[in-house]
Image 1 (tube, one colour):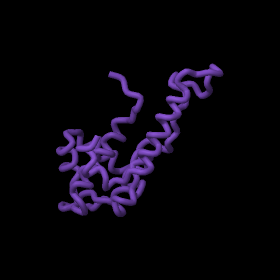
Image 2: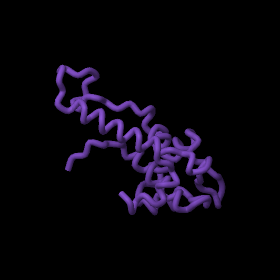
Image 3: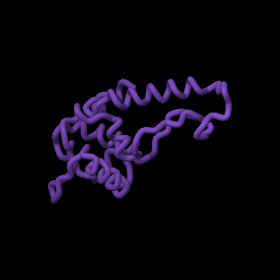
Image 4: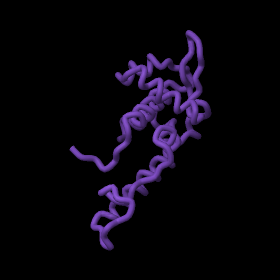
Length: 139
């Protein structure tokens, strides 16, 4: 199966982890609990969480009863912030062949690519972390 939307495993982990945290509300959740809930490597998820802490998306609470929680209200954190914390600035390619510049004056897929990129950008910019708590059933 092919998909136009491709995000890295790290970005997918970040979004899913934030979704679990959104369901937990203001409760601290350990990296072990999050990795178990997502059935992923605790070590890999810890690296993802470090990036989210550095980007002021999450706050790490140290100690035996520590864990992660949102650094600010979840309704102020956009999905774009989460993805950019992992991937860097959103910079979609206009060419599906991966070229920096189109080799043709009349690309048959150019407008579709631009339209999809615009939709993805709008969705990421206009959807906040708190929405991830309920989105799974809607998508």
